[in-house]
Length: 573
Ligand code: MCA
Ligand code: AMP
Image 1: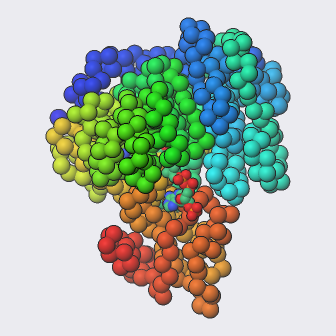
Image 2 (image 1 turned 120 degrees about the vertical axis):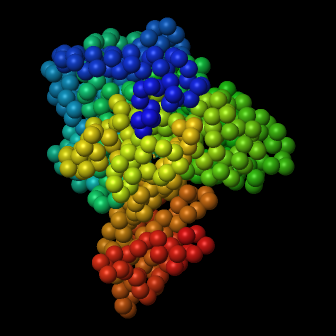
Image 3 (image 1 turned 90 degrees about the vertical axis):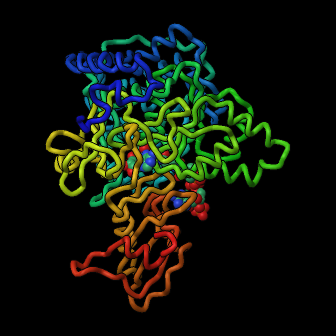
């Protein structure tokens, strides 16, 4: 049997929960996507919306049900209909094009638009307006320091930067540094006119081959790369999830994830909006808020990283258990139809403890910035296997290859490198053709760098990453070499090795083993962290520091990070 799991015959490779409908509809979707790509670009009208699949779905819903809520913005404490979302999108689209003096073409033609907007309705309008105007959305991470924003801006080379007034200071700092790029300060949207909003007019779609989204992702060897997905990619990624997890317009998602990554953007926003669901958007995760919200009932889905489930369990034990709120809290969580965990390995004890509290068996899935979601356990409880991420998603092909020889592994129970093919796979790393081609096999499969094993049911079990230089902490992917580079730029540090220390709560912690320059005062973790906060994202900064006299290297001058772990943290190695 061919080792390609997920391609024809699909019937064998997909879990039963999906049923016949998915088997039939994937070729249809592929056909319609291809057909769409072949269309030539029509002149775009400033005041209408291109019928990209996401917008066409929203239009249909807004017509059928003008009062349907798209977003409940918890920070604003306001609800917004699909109708208003489309109306505000077209208004901002017009503003963007006018600002860039592109009224005559009405098309950004893949110009990059970077934006710094907190989680909520204003974020979605901004992203949709960029897409409606034909541009590439570059969401900036709201917790990054200025230095990281400058890197992203420098690399993505945007024509325009949109900032929300809540980032007034940051915007001023950026404007100091970034010359020759236009800025817009967003006027926050209000739901005051939601029911009166006029549905904008629609025009033919832009080609789905149009680049849509740029997400920065850490690599092992270089600075973060801009991962480009097209409308075809993101539509396919979202649609595949909609089929597998059966999102509907009856769903209400509680959304707490950051919006500069695929998990929050595609699984959380795009797939929900494609299905006409309602998304409740929170500025950030807070365990107390979520437990309280679950008790109120009315939401149906929750997506998170394992650290969030771990924090929810911790909060339950510390503040809810044995109080009068306990029964309602357990009940509230139990009422949801779907709770998903991903972005990092879900420890079985976390899964078990969460099930014990809530009666919910978390559904685990596997994904990556470059491929969206690729593998998922099934909706049926029986197909949520402990320690497994399940089966390839509809339309996604997966194979395992031997790490040394590259040969395809046919059988089961042997570790191999996960490789992926399908319309879910990204287009390119922005302006890095060599880096892009390096990540693909000669026969066109994307090499994830993750190691997995497949069992006789075709279910996949992730075994970790091939590279020790990629750390996953709190669901964030972090390059150990990038952290080392920052540490080495400090005056007092002579040598450093950064490793991922296994940790129950964070998955891994960023740990730095440091040899200081002679005569320098011993570093302290807190002051080191404070210093680094100006330089890098908070989640990349080491939370463990070990000062040593010597960092052992092999004959090639390389540090063996597995040995480092064994030497300094033998209990975790
Ligand atoms: C924060 N802290 C940490 C870490 N992060 N300590 C150790 N390790 C960390 N990684 C510390 C802070 O320094 C601070 O301590 C304290 O925790 C609270 O910080 P805060 O930022 O408020 O933390 P939080 O809000 O509790 O954040 C935890 C979180 C967050 C909610 C789990 O990390 C998160 O949203 N993660 C999701 C990431 C995600 O969406 N990844 C998807 C990418 P002090 O005050 O002492 O400084 S992967 C992806 O998209 C693919 C496609 C996929 O498969 O999904
Ligand atoms: P990112 O590059 O931030 O998109 O992170 C993608 C990486 O997260 C993958 O390459 C995996 O290493 C890891 N990952 C995602 N989901 C899972 C999962 N369910 N189990 C284990 N690792 C995961």
